[in-house]
Image 1: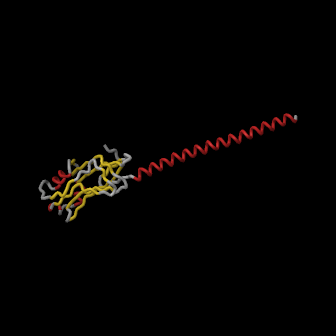
Image 2 (image 1 turned 135 degrees about the vertical axis):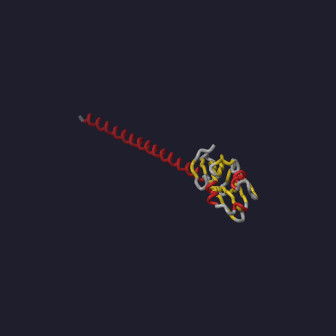
Image 3 (image 1 turned 180 degrees about the vertical axis):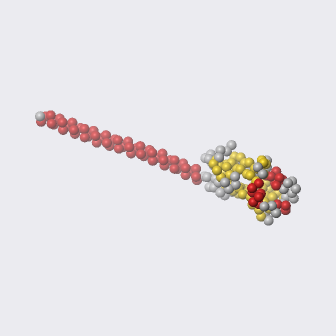
Length: 181
């Protein structure tokens, strides 16, 4: 019987060593899987940070001063360049082809306006902090016009993208994700 008990003890010793090796292997596999999941999550966070680090934010507003007259200014308040894909300008809900046409319609074609300049924003890259005036118009008839009313009448949508291809549409101070073409 002693021989039988010795064989049984050897059997259990071999089982114990086999079990401890299996536990170590299983733990190594589990740690590897957890490490992979953490790595994938960390990569997504880093990618998100990269996109945020070059995020453009275009706004436009109308402004008036007795010295400068009326102008529409586009500003990139973001931290990355804005790649302008397209723009749509309108007056009273009707499409307008250009800033020059917009100015003629605002003054009903009866203007003593001095157009300081007219700039197009289409297909431009606007750097962070850069400010562009779409138009700048001095007109004595506009001095008495209500700027709030003019803001309601003018519609301007700028569709732009970041260098990573994330796109937004700005309709003034309101910016929303969009698909630009």
